Image (cartoon, rainbow, N blue to C red):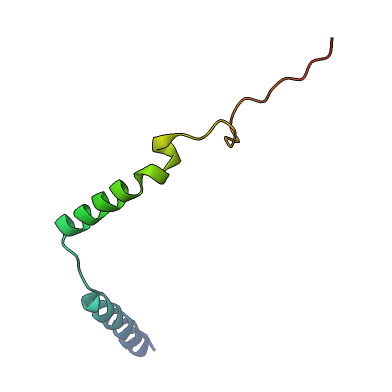
Length: 68
């Protein structure tokens, strides 16, 4: 029984290796350039960089309502 399970395991490994070998690769320098370009293009829409409008900011301190 261990022989057939060993063959099945090896077939799964070969299948995974074939899948990984067929994956298109991108050079790190190209991926970094693409990421930098994406960040620059979307910087104006990023609330961490531009901040939130005080009217739409859900994290602003709540106004206190007090009665005299």
